[in-house]
Length: 229
Image (cartoon, helix red, strand yellow):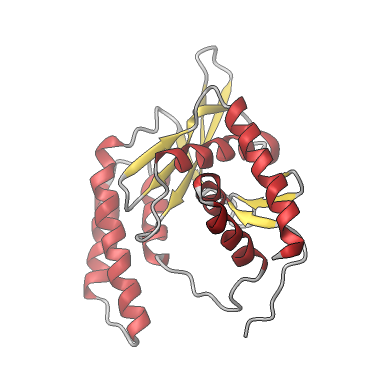
């Protein structure tokens, strides 16, 4: 029996995207899972995340970074069933990401690894963990500084889908605006979510007021549901 309980409402940005398009029963389940998380969860896809971050931080063109990571995983030995499953899943994630590289355009922005311990975004009393993997730095047409961010979604069994992906990208843009203060104007077109297994890239829309209002209403709903789950 898991007796860990979070006292304050919180949710990860990818789960918030799922919440935005979920049924009423699934929404309740998502809130319950966030309030009463499993005590010990070992992160999946660690090697895939590291390789993709390195690839993006080096300009997003050097495929040998991904190929070397895949080669290391192919030759690695596993000491447990869980480790072997994670090795195979990370390999599949890298293969899926390789399929996306032709569609990935950083638009002249410089990519740098994001802070591993960033602040959280507060929306209607809910603490939203956004944690973008990459921050983008560039320039606007008038020469002023511009910024963006990339959030990765690596989940074989729970792809975001286009609508949820746009909600996540919208939240990444809001996070960049409200919390990260990256030293440049947060450009929606430079705020993106890369859904690896779905092989989709979701870009934050320029017209974001309605989606932000939807997200705020959803967070109000999470706050109300929190004490009862």
